[in-house]
Length: 127
Image (tube, rainbow, N blue to C red; front, top):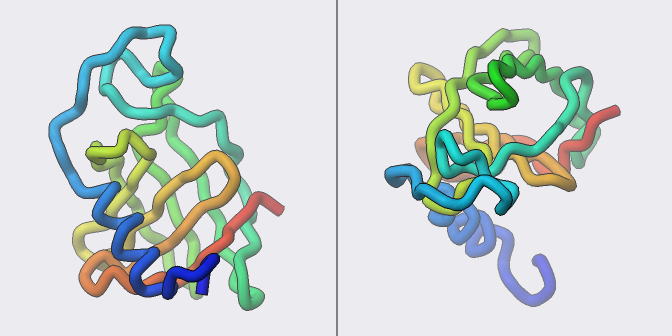
């Protein structure tokens, strides 16, 4: 439970907030990219440690201060997740073939099974 909210309900709300929608145009000084209407956080590449001892590695591909994709190494396999604009503006990356979804928050990352909306790795932070 997360402060009185079942985890499954909290994940559903988080995933709904990150659903794909057309980008919103906002002012450049708002902290949101004026090119995409999406948040851009200066987050590191490298090894990440998550809850329950889960480890993964991310390599970010940044072009013109915009994170376009991430390379994810997880459970001995390599995945390329493409940026997928979200309604909330949060950085959301998806590998359509595997169904993996990575969501960046300024304080943590979250890996989901995009088909079932089940968290696979939570509370992921740069090591």
